[in-house]
Image (tube, rainbow over all chains, first blue to last red; front, side, top):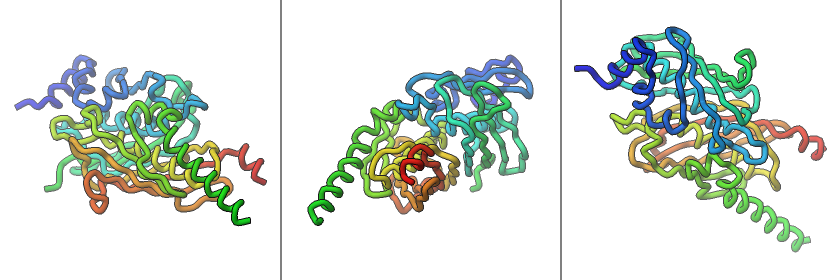
Length: 148
Length: 157
């Protein structure tokens, strides 16, 4: 039996069509996340909109939005790269903020550092104007198979 | 003397009430999500995120996405730090760590209790616990560090 995730993954890998994959994660759609690129170079994009601002005075992107966007980028990368039949569960997530997020689009790229039989480790970088000037870096562990 | 002290206490109270009441208008994303401060004390807040299907990360299993829980915790820890002050000053998150102890489930609201554990001239530390039904059965715990604004530091010294 083919699961929705397996079908979405095939569409993403073979045709570079990510809408099915994003449709599996309602919160990614709520944030308005898009995926671009092919093969090993998929980049997540968060189009800016006023509802994502964390401080009206400073007009800065909400720090929690940056974190949530990066967590999504990691989860989507795992769903795309690994042959899973379910969405992985987050174990932990740690983010370091390097620059204040501006009122503009943000981008994120995830590198899967290690995949074990049950746990995966990932590192995410998020930037706005230049990839070489990240606004935040994060690392996370994910549970791939439920421990019964 | 006693009267002055009382007047100060009233003013401090007003500042914290204002923090809670103006939270959604000052923080557009909090307004987008309808996050609200349900309790505020000196250095501690309780914040609530009403459930929505849009928070799901795994619609099939009915699990809330960890990202929206992180966003709630960031807001709650920041507010806990602000509630420690006597008047508003901007703070910026330096780092934040989440441990997801249990999955967050549909269709329950999410509640976060955050407290400021230590504050210096430059840095503020906070910790948080998140639950849905029972505060003794947390779905997540978190630690966060914030930086205070340098402009205010010059004014303070």
